[in-house]
Image (cartoon, rainbow, N blue to C red):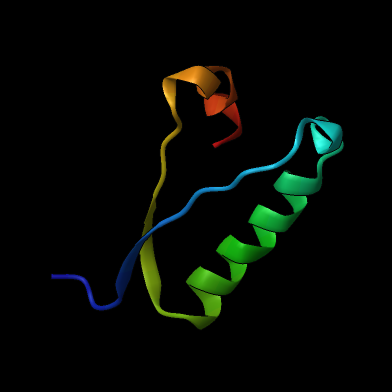
Length: 58
């Protein structure tokens, strides 16, 4: 059994901030911290059917 944490992550942004790379940049830093400094070994995520087009961002 792996030692460490499994976490579930998600995000929400207002349409005003879409397509500016803000979520990509922020989420990249969150993942970096999780894996390198917080003992996380797996991250799960998902999206509501309404936002299925964003699954490629995950």
